[in-house]
Length: 211
Length: 211
DNA sequence: GATAACTTGTGAACGATTTCACAAGCCCTC
DNA sequence: GAGGGCTTGTGAAATCGTTCACAAGTTATC
Ligand SMILES: NC(=O)c1ccc[n+]([C@@H]2O[C@H](COP(=O)([O-])OP(=O)(O)OC[C@H]3O[C@@H](n4cnc5c(N)ncnc54)[C@H](O)[C@@H]3O)[C@@H](O)[C@H]2O)c1
Ligand SMILES: NC(=O)c1ccc[n+]([C@@H]2O[C@H](COP(=O)([O-])OP(=O)(O)OC[C@H]3O[C@@H](n4cnc5c(N)ncnc54)[C@H](O)[C@@H]3O)[C@@H](O)[C@H]2O)c1
Image (cartoon, rainbow over all chains, first blue to last red; front, side):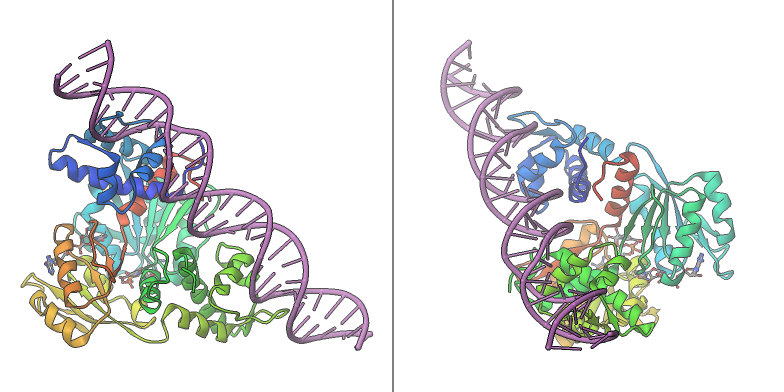
């Protein structure tokens, strides 16, 4: 299979969200055009995105909503559950640990860790904060695939080294720090300050930011 | 000026972060190559990004760290402060309201609003949660430029309509909902479930996600 | 002031992604 | 079962973003 652009995967995730809304409204079938206008893209883009993975529609009719939901889930790897550990039970870590939007998509938070004794033992929704000393043991025991990093930037690299050594193969990093991961580990960074800065750029340069 | 790609703006924000670290370490001058390796890009990319806005370096020598920080701040619109309101004082809104990474970059949270009476009057760090009924009056009085949306997806569109009607011109949306904004308003969405799903795709299809 | 060692700024080449455009397929009606 | 009206799937074209490659400028050294 040829390499898939990240932009394609991101759109598939959005299509899935929309399809679920259409399904909830009882719509049985949908055309690439309907799927496109709801999101800000074109029908050709929708069809091209799907075409990388196969042929899911019926010419003249469109896509069966329920089938396409199943197909996109399969493509994205959401037909199974994924286990997630959160490192850092501060403000953002606590918010994420209690975020229901993860569980409903098959991402189960199996552990949250902090090194501050005041936080260890605290309950966040269903789950209890554990000591960071237990990170390695728990990762080896529970075999989570994904680590979400919510620690201060200064310790981000050290923490990533620990979790990847213990067997984590994907990292979502909220710390505003550039961290290196070993080969075979995927990493994504969410930098909220950067998002605000892109807005500020747009406000400062009307009409100049390619949308 | 020709339209600037979002990828360029995003990298400028990262260059700025790195330059600040280099400045803190007392480094006076830096080459495009040094700036590139720290981040995962190339020296040509760094120079090209900067070249859209002018010429900031000295051939043979590189860039003056302090000057370049000033230039990038100017480009991004960070030479001034921006006022931000947060709508929704739930878990994520509360975390963002207390996030110091915004203030240090010139984004001042001037108000946070909720419609839940139990939350109104609560203190989050320096700032007190106010009633959502005061959103319009405050926006007209304080003239913030940016609204950060931390409300449930079902009400996101209604809230965006309210804040843009009141004069907000940029929106950062954390709700997993596709919302429409009027012409002249910029919007960005941060969708954490999508980020996890991109990781899941990568885990499910090793070697197939173009990096 | 000539030479060497660097580094920038930038057209041009390249590669990737999006858009276009249309043949092929499906459903419905007559 | 033929025709009309839709819609998909996909090569080809167009657009957009990144990388290459090099002339030109700077500093240091002799
Ligand atoms: N608060 C936000 O809204 C927000 C937004 C974007 C990014 N971030 C980033 O997310 C990170 C966390 O932010 P926060 O606001 O939650 O900060 P916080 O101080 O509330 O939480 C950080 C937590 O990490 C813990 N910690 C420190 N070192 C650790 C270690 N080695 N192992 C385990 N836990 C450790 C601390 O004890 C603390 O509880 C920071 O890098 C911040 O820049 C925060
Ligand atoms: N918690 C997370 O980590 C997280 C992560 C990503 C995205 N999100 C999204 O962010 C949004 C908020 O999530 P949360 O976890 O903070 O939920 P939450 O329920 O803790 O907070 C939502 C808050 O919005 C308030 N609200 C509802 N309607 C309002 C209105 N019309 N005006 C003002 N306030 C109103 C509610 O009273 C509540 O306090 C949701 O859309 C969620 O999907 C949350």
